[in-house]
Amino acid sequence: MTATAPRPGASPIRRPFTAAALAAALVSLVFGLVLAGAGPASAHAALTGSDPQDGAVVATAPKEVTLTFSEAIAVGDGSIRVLDPSSKRADTGAEPKDLSDGSTVRYGVELHSGLPDGTYTVAWQAISADSHPISGAFTFSIGAPSETTVALPSDEVGGGPVGTVYGIARYVAYAGFTLLVGGAAFVLGCWPRGASVRPMQRLVVRGWVTLTAATLVMLLLRNPYTGSGKFADAFDLDGLQAVLDTKPGAALVSRLLLLGAAALFIAVLFGTYARREDALEKKDLAFGLAVGGGVVAAGIAATWAMSEHASTGIQAGIAMPVDVLHLLAVAAWLGGLVSILVALYRTPDIGSDAVRQFSRVAFGSVLVLAATGIYQSWRQVGSWSALTGTRYGQLLILKVVLIAVLLAVAWFSRRWTGRLTDAAPGEAAEEAADPAETADDVDPARAAQLARQQAVLTATKKKRIRDADPERSGLRRSVLAEAAIAVVLLAVTTVLTSTEPGRTEVEAKGASAAAPAPAAGPVNLSMPFDTGGQNGKGTVRIDIDPGRTGSNELHVWVDGSDGKPMDVPELKVALTLEAQEIGPLPVVPDRLAEGHWSASGVQIPMAGEWKVDVTVRTSDIDQVTIDKNVKIG
Image 1 (cartoon, rainbow, N blue to C red):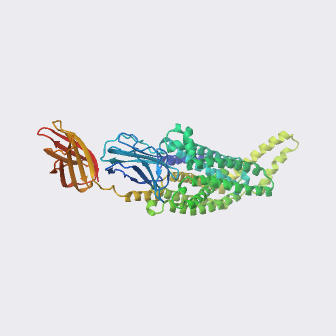
Image 2 (cartoon, rainbow, N blue to C red):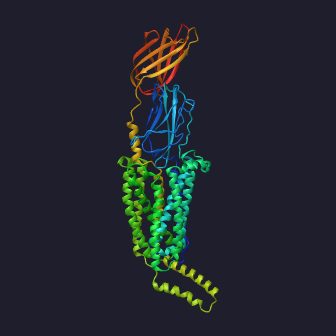
Image 3 (cartoon, one colour):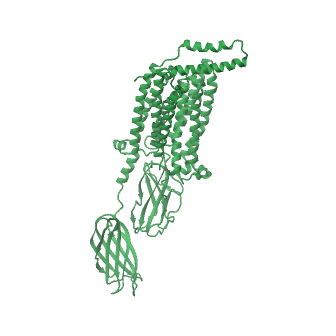
């Protein structure tokens, strides 16, 4: 790889224009990635079972409905609602009871007594332990399935425009943290003179402003993000108070308080520290800033660790400090990378020592990232199938590939760093002598003006000389490529934090697959009839035992309007599975006693929603056919 100096007469704005164009393209790509991953939040806790189960038909009304989840959740009033066929509340409306036992997470709600037959809908909504909203719904039937008028929201909780904005704010918060912590660490640890350089000051301050603004947006949107999905609810004071009582809300407030301390750190770094001249005093102040800044940075990183993936699942006590180290290493590496880029493009003063010092910091950060990343990957994935067969695992593979590419580009940057040279001392002395020569016999105001003009000319000259340095030019290009990859890497990481961990997804699927099928038992039907003739009113009761595919026993009882057994001249039964266009399958039961018929070996070929037709004839001319749907199998 070779580098050539700029051609004489080349436009001085050509390279910055190229960098700006690349930055615009990167922003478009990043927002595309974030928007693609900012749809409805994936369920980080999963519903693994329920009683009654989804689609079950029970003979009698249960006293309560229970739901089992793969990991801890937060619930409140209305988190679990049971609705009858007419969309009225069938539960008592009390807060769900915590029925968890050991590692089993289970919640339940009590039902009203005397519930009629029909199909009931269970709608649930909760907050996963890693701060993401989850929701779902299922049905069960009492006696037999029926039509239902329950209309559930079509949008999944955590989606819609609010979910999109919240997802963007998450990305912006990570970016702001990276610039704030990485930029400050670069100035303090690699280039102390950068504390007095305006572009470096702007970079760190903008990182602080970005993180603060994103945190405020997330705090205000937290209520609609986990609830209604309406922007207007962002200013609902009751909803905001409820958010503050949750773990994610407390984490966001803690982050804002720590950002207040970070503002004081920035003021000292770019004020007192930048102006301090005495070397010993400056060293002591740098040590104090490093300790204080490190504590604040770790605290801000902990606000993510304590409220997201690391705070739940296996080994949470180890995972949270590991996550803090991972975030700090990311910030030191990527934030320092952006700082190098800004210094190379915007300041002529950065020398080879600062670049080499950052190279050592970046190497240490990569080692920390490798160790913590391997642990996090094992914890969140846990198996090869989860790595290759889940969205989380596939995103993790993409992240590893991006890091590998980033390291390859960094290797080229390290080669350019080794060739980097500083300005010759003679040049600096010559430049420093120029202002004095022009200041003799001139009034102070004029001397100050000349000094400012000379300073601008000197800075321009130094920048032109350094821009012509092929090593510095090559380093700028390689660092720009590193920063470009880092921006995409940060976007993938943001989407990764909004995706259900592979281990959780696989375990939830396994639990669902291993869940026992609904208990087989007699299907009980009761259907009134009226043939229109004399003594033509009554009730038909049917039992199908065991109520599953294969051979079944069918019993039919006919009761008159007085409730006593009633004989009829003719009784016929037919079964139809309309969804699969099977049937009608005729069943001709035999009379066993007055008002009682039965048939043995009734074959039901497959499970599904079967329609049971019963034809009752009470006289030569009076006859009626009635039907009812029932789920069998």
